[in-house]
Length: 478
Image: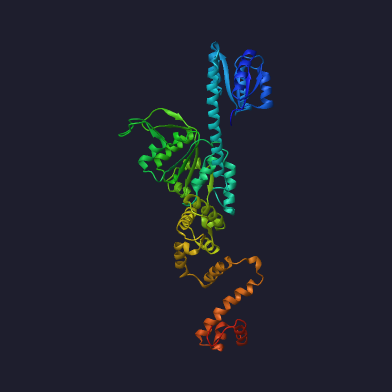
């Protein structure tokens, strides 16, 4: 927001004239008001980027007008003009949200300096606003969290209900399902957007260091504590703290966390002074917390504090319909990150990806796509670009039933066809199955049609008809 329109409100005509002349020379559009009531009316009619208000005016006083402007036009920057005898009021104005103040009589250079500073502040505010919008868009539901399957629709519904509130959320799901992504989406779609998002993995930090990471320490709290350190709670103040793998938090630390949630205050290690904090908690785990509670490995009272709103993320093998969308998303991301040309995924490769069980969930899929994008010499990914998955499928095929094998092969074949253009699929598939089946039995009976018909369980005349229809060379057995 560049500063273009300025309102000057003062009951002294000479002040209005001087400021108007000086500001117009700088290229600003300037309106003048001789009292607070007129100024408020002009605000409501025109709107301004900056207002210069006298603290003493007829009608509505400057401080009252400041309060009204703050409520109705929070984006407007307000500069208060005051005499030496009313410096206390100037301080009060700053506390109430004024951007700056000028002491009468003032030099016009002082006003220029304030406007220049305000201009830069407005530019920074614009940049922050754009950044907030980008982050909100980046972590919007359906943008970074991909999938339209029924399990994901349930997740979206819950996210929509809780994002704008301050309730504590417990996210559960297998490793790789995207629990931190959900936590970030909650934060960046909440009123805490623009405030810190701080994440800590409770399982990745040794238990003796975890307390220090969460609460920080005072200088001299222990050997080597040469400086004061702010913990994750302090760093996240005003924003969101994501406690990943909360199920691995030691019991003694769970008690301290419970107290923080109840009292909304912390004490650094080695300190005696408490500090008020305003932090929203989103916790996550891949463990069954209810079972840990029964086993006395997790505090029941803390569990209920954290589990205000539960969100359960489905494993990828429970939402395989989302795999095509996820593949498309990861392909685009990999192309941007790796700087490679556009790559697509073939139907055969996509079919292979959909058959895989994905024990590592979405994270595994992302890594597989990134590796294939980087290593493939082609612009279209084929099954051969996923050798790890092919070998897994081969291993499974050794114990695969005949029906499963046929189903898998049939799925591969159908994935390459446009089913909308077919009207004889049933006959076509039957012929493709019958021909090799009859061929194999004829070879094993050395062309004996009577024995072949018996094994197949069909009439000999029916076999002859099929041999003719399917154009099978009985002598060659093919």
